[in-house]
Image 1: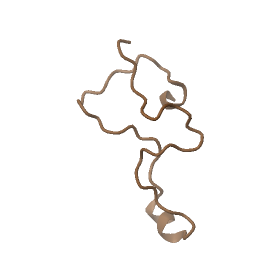
Image 2: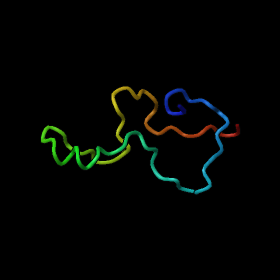
Image 3: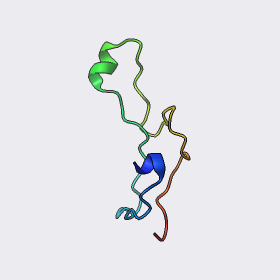
Image 4: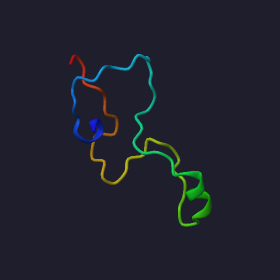
Length: 64
């Protein structure tokens, strides 16, 4: 919900100093990628899907 709407705005920040990239979409299941020749596995999980119109690197709200 947060990625789609930006709410809730009172999300607690990460405890890790560098939590890594923001996941935009997951890899295809291995079964699908191996058996469907028309499908190519994604290179990483940071690629935006067509309906995701949010900024490329969303951050959590500061001070809320």
